[in-house]
Image 1: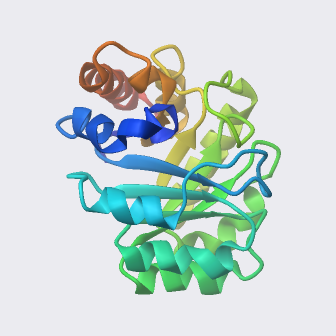
Image 2 (image 1 turned 60 degrees about the vertical axis):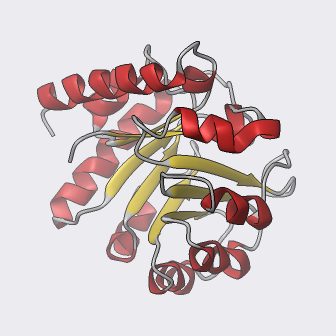
Length: 225
């Protein structure tokens, strides 16, 4: 699969979200929406009403990343609202299989996210229930953090695990993805890249997306996986 870039609007201007989404509509593949509840992570951001509003103005599908408690209750509602992808965290879900199936039943891609210290091997049996595995490359909760190289071996293990089961599951990385780190992520096996500061901190966000995608494609073409 060709690399996909999902700019995170956590780094955008919250007072002009629709305009900032429009800036990347010609080059990005997704709009990554970080939903935080100040419980599962120590930050409070956007919720379902904002997602519903963005869906009316975005030419790109929304990739909703739920960093919240009780995702079993809330995740299906994001899918029903029209999100293209909804990711729940393994550390927060009490009934992950039921919730992942509910997301898919509502018409969205189902994602499972894991924090940096969470081993990925314990979720191999759930790969058939998901469309994307999200590996956090920073501790979740805040944008602009430094990339954690310690996660790269886990990305490789995740890719090998998926390849071993011959499943069309995407591997997404989120946190500290930039021109300095994206090639290492692609080489390790990631194919969907969340980039916040690297896109919205640039003078030209659309061009930043274009450059990141080119870097990822170059590294993917040379990768052994």
